[in-house]
Image (tube, rainbow, N blue to C red; front, side, top):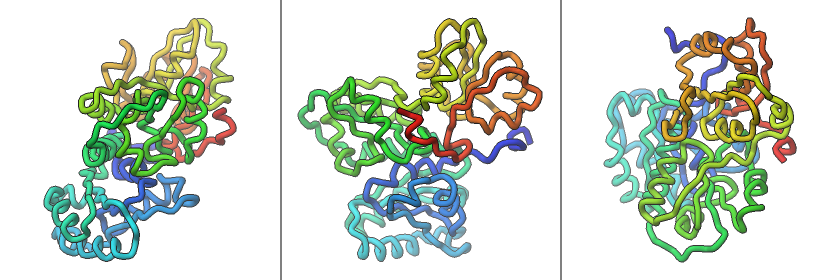
Length: 346
């Protein structure tokens, strides 16, 4: 039971991550479940649900249809919806049941495209991994399906991968765009305040900006296919967090967030010894020697006393009642479901 969370809420799962990437792109997104997983996405993991419309559905399969893998039922429903909604593609997002019964997603893709006449992407999430894995798979599937042609490069245009509420705590792209506009003429956040055309035209960018580990594989694909370089940035650290971390002189600091965000904050700290940690994926290529993956709550509890300052989502403080150092809030929506006031990002 080491993975049991006793102090913090469950972390956002991979199917929520996939839906977060696909949410604004103008497709019909179907969560392959009997209803429960879709409720989790819309009720807890997708803040745009209340302010921006999206064709995001549960497959609504009866228990036995889901368990027996009645793909024809799903495709029939998908075709009916596509006749009523002017969508540009369809997407099927996996959950635990299709994972357990080994659903053939390639067959599902072929059946759906034949029945609807629309491109279909499938994201083989299982509901048992964390959100960054689902985002990673969704980004890669999107660019492989739609970014096929090398277009003339637009000088000063950059594309941002990883701009989801789960990574940033933002429901709009304004803060990210403002943070990059000083350096670049045109900034596009793929999947946030942008649609499918921006994915199709990704090869116009002179550079890709990756703001979360979930965007690394897609950025590598774009680099291999179109020769476009990528770099890391996180231009949306809350102003309040930055204010409270100005004076860290001589202190030992631990930053907990998704890896790119943690790294970017570390780069802004001066004259201190700083390690980064994450509950989510750790890429060895951008990690430093003492950075680590948090395995469970006990893992963080055991290591906390090594640090004078911990910077992370305030929900982590509940599991550290005996910690005597300073705790600075650095909110992470995938952990606590807290949207940060956008004014505090500027």
